[in-house]
Image 1 (cartoon, helix red, strand yellow):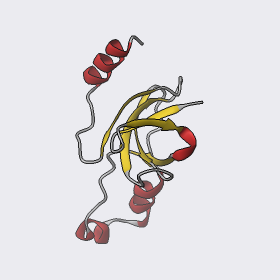
Image 2 (tube, helix red, strand yellow; image 1 turned 90 degrees about the horizontal axis):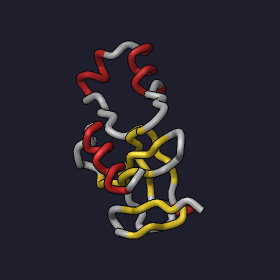
Image 3 (cartoon, helix red, strand yellow; image 1 turned 120 degrees about the horizontal axis):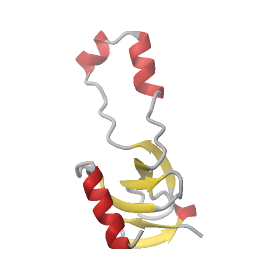
Image 4 (cartoon, helix red, strand yellow; image 1 turned 30 degrees about the horizontal axis):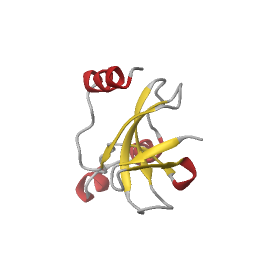
Length: 106
């Protein structure tokens, strides 16, 4: 069973308590920007996302727990979670991710 660390509960819980909520750190255009966007640009914003092979920043929802959203760095090849962190914290750099992996012995 895959265990996911919730940074709000500060516990590792089974994956069935969580729901994937898309790519992390996507900035929504403000109202003025939206008004000037073409249908094609709006469609790209809504539906086109990176499909990274390897470490990927994602948003997750602890649906059957604290009901809070958080971000996670997950490897899409191995399905291992490298780190979870609260929404609002900066996206980790590649060097930070490598440091976390070294500390975990990966």
